Amino acid sequence: MTNTTPKPQPLPQPETDRYWEGLKNEEIWLQRSKATGKFQFYPRQISIHDPASGAEGIEWVRVSGDAELFTFAIVHIAPHMGFVGDVPYITALVQLAEDVIVPTNIVGIDPEPENLQIGMALKPVFEHHEDGQTLLKFKPA
Amino acid sequence: MPNIQRLKNLSGQAHIVGVGESNKLGKVPEKSPLAHHSEAAINALDDAGLELSDVDALFTAGWSTLDVAEYLGIQPRYTDSTSVGGSSFVIHVAHALAAIAAGYCEVALITHGQSGRSDRAPIPRNPGTPMAQFEAPYGILGPPVSYAMAARRYMHQFGEDRTRQAMAEIAVSTRKWANLNPMAYFYDKETTFDDYHNSRWVAWPFHLLDCCLVTDAGAAIVITTPERARDAKNGSVKILGAGEGHDHSGISQMPDLTSAFGRYTGPQALEMAGVTHSDLDLAMVYDSFTYTVLVSLENLGFCGPGEGPDFVADQRTAPGGDFPLNTNGGGLSYTHPGMYGIFTVVEAARQLRGQAGERQLDNCNLAVAHGTGGLLSSTGTVVLGAN
Image (cartoon, rainbow over all chains, first blue to last red; front, top):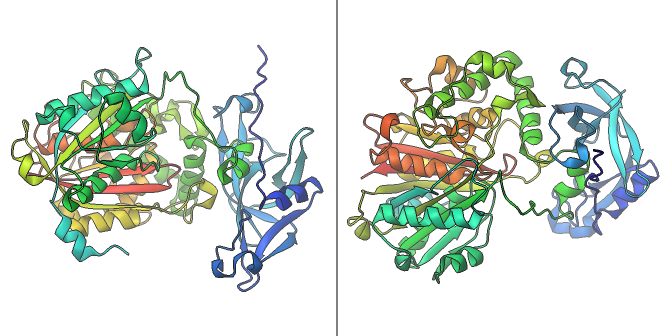
C-alpha cells in the first residue's frame, strides 16, 4: 500500500511571510535588531534583543546561508506518516554565520553518524515544493 | 524573581493525602482518556478516605478542567488547566499548595488520563505555531527526534562513549526497578546491557531502549490542608518545596541543549524546603528518555555539568544501589502515556508512606519529584516529606 499522507507544510504568519517568500527566490532573509546588531530566528513582531523598540527596531537582512553543523539526529522511525518514505533521514540544528540556530535537514550524504561531524561547514539547498513552500536544507560545503 | 522567604512560609502548608492510578495501565483500548481520569480520581480519593463531593479544586493538563469537571460531575471553586507538557502535574502540586494556603480551596484534585497507545482521537496540532512552521516540515516533530538532537550535542561536549554508557546504565537500572513493580509494563521482562546496545535505532543516537513506553494510563493526586490531612485514611505527605518554569518551546530555540530549566527549579525547591541533596532519600526524575534523566540529575544539582555519566555509573541507581532513582520503573519501563509527570509524585508519595511493596526503600523520609515537559522545555520540581 502506498502511503499518501502529506508532510506537514509551513503555514506562514504575517510576520514570517517575508522569510518564506525569500526562500522561493532562493534568498535567505533574517531579522536583525537595529540597536544591537543581533539577528534572530525565527521572524517575530519584536526583536528579542531589543523588545522595547517594537517592530521599528527590526531590519530585514539578506544573508549567505553559510552555516556549521550544531547537532543532528538520524531518524529511523518516522514521527509522522508523511515521513515514512524518507527514513532514515538526517535532522539537524545548524548555526548560521549570523549566530542563529536553524532547524533543518542535511541532504546530499548518506545518513550515517560517521558522515556528520559537529562543526562541519554547510551551505544552503533550496528545496521547492510545487504546491507549498520552499524548504531551506543544507549540504556539506 | 521567586521570593524565597515567602516561599519558606508556604512550605508544608498542604499535604498529599491520596494517590492512585487508573485500574489498568498499558494497552487499554476499551477505555477513553476521560475514563482513565475518572478511575484514577476515584482511586486517589478512596486512598484519602474522601469522595468526589469533597473536592473543591480541580487541576489537569492535556484536557481543559471544563471537560474533566463536567465528566466527573463536579463544580470546582478553583480551576487550573496549566498545560506545559508532562511536567504540568508536578507544577499543579505546587499550585494546589499555594491555592490551599491562600484559602481558595481545601480539597484539591489533580487528574491525568491519556490513551497514548489507543486513543481514537488524533493529536491536535496548530499549524501556525513557530514549531509547526519551522521544525515540523523538516520531520522534526515528536519528542524522540528533538531529544536525540539534544543528546547528540551533550555527547559532543562531554564525550560520546561515556554518555552512551550512562544512557545504558539508566535503561538497565530502571528496568530492574520495574521488575519489582507489578503495575509496570515490563514487570516480567528483564533487560541487559546487550539488550540495550542491540535494540534498534529510533532516532540515532537513541536506541529503542533509550525511549519511554507509549501506554494508556491515568493517575490522580488529592491534596488538602494540614488540619484535614490528620484524618487521611492512609497517611499524608508534606509538600515542602517547589519550583516551575520554562525557557523555550521548540528544540531549536532551547538556549542550551545540555541544560534544562531544572537548573532553576531544583535548587529553588530544595531551598524552599530547607534541605540539601544529601538529605534526600529518593529521586523521581521524569525519564521520557535516558538522556532526560542524565541532564536532569545535573540540573537538579546532584552533580555538575558533564558529571552525570560518572554519577550513574556501575548501576548506582538500581535496586540496592546507594542512589534510588525512579523506583516505580519510570516512563522507560513502568508506564508512559504521553505526559508522565504525575506518576513521579504518585510513586514518591507511596515511598514516603511506606506503601511501595517489594520495592519499598528503608527509611524514606524525603523525596524529590522532577517533571520535564515538552521538548526539554518546562520543568516542575517538588520536594516531599514523610509525616
